[in-house]
Image 1 (cartoon, rainbow, N blue to C red):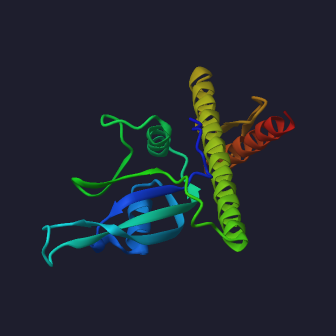
Image 2: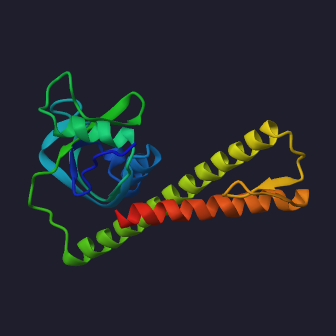
Length: 207
């Protein structure tokens, strides 16, 4: 299933407590939850915000974090999260990322221009993103080939059953029955399936 993912979306976490003021910790949370690969986190102390006892030394500072992604993963989790982020915010619909259940961050689209990425940052992000899509495309091709191979195997099994053929008979892509050794049977079927897969993929590319 294809998901519409906004790869250019960056986020802001308006309230981050001191124990989570660590770039790698934040990166790990988003990675482990299969949300995406974060390229950079900019953490800023909010001088006028604190939490804890009023008027005492136990008051602690609050930080804000800006998240820049090199890749948002293409899956249902990310699709739903981005939908919540881009929807009109309300108390009943907030985009949340759990970092230590039940503790979570409420995340928003980053619309601030204070912290910009450099040209080199953008070049690195583009390279990582292209590599991700290349690997994703390769994975899809392998999955398609494996699916076609399984279908080919099913067709061969049905033909053998239909014509009461022994297991040392092989059926090629044009359904020509030839004798073969049992150890070569699987290899020939695999080669036929992969050849069929490549033909299908080439046709799709021509479209």
